[in-house]
Image 1 (cartoon, rainbow, N blue to C red):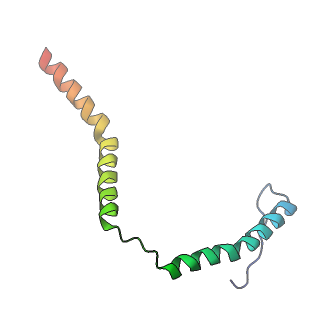
Image 2: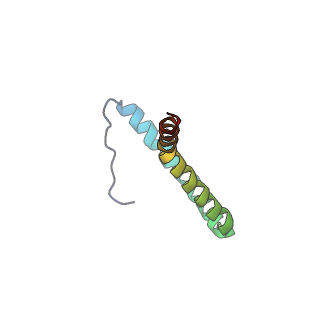
Image 3: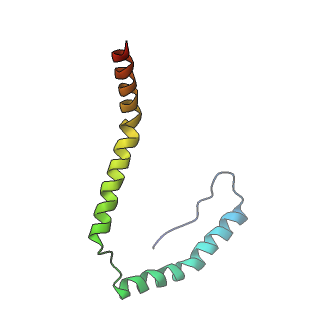
Length: 84
């Protein structure tokens, strides 16, 4: 990272911003070490079946949550109309 600076946030004390920036700078080497160890170990998600099933399940759940209440209401209206 080149040419960066700290910008004060609204409602924050300069001491808090400085401490937070120092904490981030101290944590960066640990994050880089973790990212490097995962890449070096070759840990790649190759469980395509699990990913595919999660995609299908998520799509079905989204469809049901989006249209479920409308379908239930339509069925109730249809049944109450036919009951008369």
